[in-house]
Image 1 (spheres, helix red, strand yellow):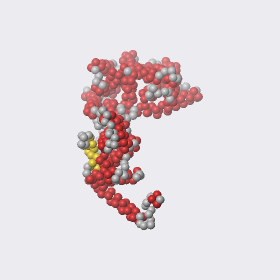
Image 2 (cartoon, chains in turn brown, green):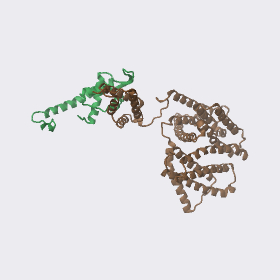
Image 3 (cartoon, one colour):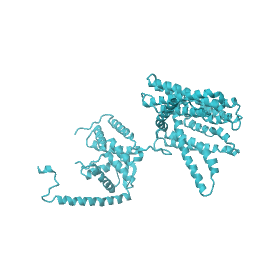
Length: 460
Length: 124
């Protein structure tokens, strides 16, 4: 029998081979790290036996791996025994891999901040400001301040932002809070409502700065924030759905024993839940980032063809029947929302697209959607422009018009870049850069509405 | 000799339980013991043993515990539980029934003049 080869470093090469085999195993979803260790122990046992029988390390390794069986078959057997492993699970609490203490810390911080937000929303009640009553405008105006600074703080803590950035963000929030509360709004006026509506949009930029940190200057960092925002929106909607069920059960169960829980539900459960869920939702998005597929792009894929179809048939019908758009007072808002929707579909398609891939049918569909939305909006603007003097320049209408211009500008240039990409005249990355570069514009416009509109329109 | 997959799978549970009834053991040693018991005729694909062990553990027939091998490596040892012992007794009864039925028919077939059990090539 031949003497087994014992070259220098041969044991390292065996370790290297085992390590490579381990990495193949680890890629199988049905096989957990502990299973890999168990199988590795087996492999080493087999190799040792074969070595004693006189095989070289290389031969022993090959035979042992062969006897272990085909990876697909093993992983198939594991999957049959552990079918739950094929569903990616997000465990609340530290997973058994990766730095567990860090994950636990983050969970604690996030939930503590959620509780702080929930308590903060109750603080004004100590000063006699009642949620849901005549003081509701106060809450609507200040809603952002109960949760967004805490959310910003969460990311500031997580990303270890420098003191200067933290102070800057804090000053931003303080200035906004001051403005929202010193302006002498007329009760029930349009400008107050506009402020309440636009403040979160303006302040979301500060959250983004904390979220991306140093990476805000780069397109990739901003795109991550876009992805985060989309997932948070979906998670928030899901949490709200669960919250609705909770509210319903609470009311119903106490009703059954003759107690009206409306006070507890209305002034505690709902407001505390609304703010707390923002932070819990953000933490969930952060925790599940790599565990669960992003939902926003999936929804985008589903709905882009449907919306494109709707818009095209709308335009087709309008041209065929010759019916112009009947401009009602709220038409501007409706078309703003349409543009927001199309922009969202575009943005989340971009966020999930491989920028190296060549154009496909879905790209064509998106361009179709973009162009039909632009045409529909152009018709609407024409109709509105013709009657703007008749309606008059109210704060709502000017804000709506401004939004339309902001969105239209983005979509026009996007359509141009997209067509250029489809014709092979430009890279997809330029479209991505355009979208991320445009992000601050929305917040800046919202800030203009918050800062300039009330004095411009006499706080009415 | 090639033993069909189904037959190997059916025999796996009683074999593993019985081997663990001899004493605590771990994957590789269990497989080696199977080889010894069958004179090397019963060949399992090594990796397939582990899903079987995990199933038995889930059913509560055996209990796994991480320990260390002689060389200090992590190794998972398995122990038969009380439930596993009951299961083994049940399997023993079942296999006894199958075994005795087969034994009787083998005996009947191998009576003189009915040499139906030898491969045809043996007749030349």
